[in-house]
Image (cartoon, rainbow, N blue to C red; front, top):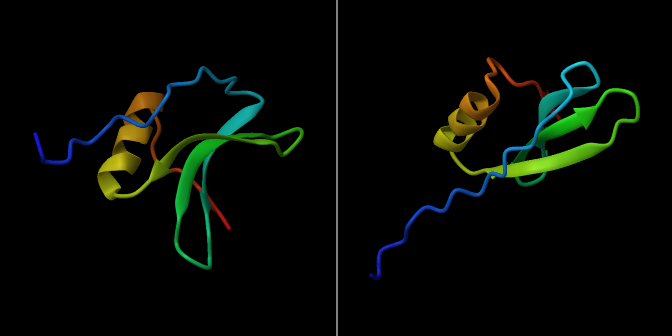
Length: 73
């Protein structure tokens, strides 16, 4: 009742593997990381989920069938 339950904060979004690539957008100021999809033609970033732990990153990788995810600062 009083314990914190982890909410699944990821909405799985279908993406075009030819025109979008998964990336981690990382802040150099505070270390915040956001996983999302970047359109390679326009550079538009679509946020999928906030990464707070290595478990969150692994969840993102498994949901999209990914290996390493490149970071952008």
